[in-house]
Length: 240
Image: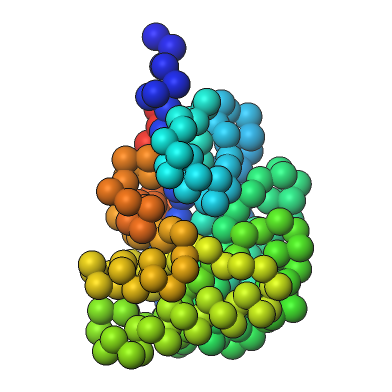
């Protein structure tokens, strides 16, 4: 039976590092091989899914407008060099929109929050972030330092939320409207502070469909890992 428009959903996919081989001691839940990624993008290209931007999805939710096809949003946390080297060329070839959540205070450094030192990888520079933005990648904030916000005092949370937005806007010359909670960590106070900072939406690490979220500041995402073959990937989209 053909689904009615009201049944079509929006699934936000969450990626971290994409590369040729996993770094030593890498958390494989945060890694996707470039071969897997290309296969996944080809599937989306050839199937009936519409790949839309996060900002478009927020407008759909706010306006209570239903998508005309099952829709997918591609999001990438941290902004490590693999996005520049591996992901961006694929997205450009497919003409897919995406959003990259950058850690403003770590640009040009390493993913120091990764527990295993040998698994740490370089983070994109300001210049590389501008290249991605010029290629129509939406830039969102992933805080200043990637610390768990609920572990911080209110003053530190404000710096993480406000300063990252301001800094990234200076880098790309455009408003930053989306936020990704570091480590998926948030509570009601964090939500209120992110909203007050001027963001239009924020994403979590909780699985589910975005159009069924409680609010635009608790958008669920479906985690894509090294262990996901194409069948698992299709299942995680959650729209079939």
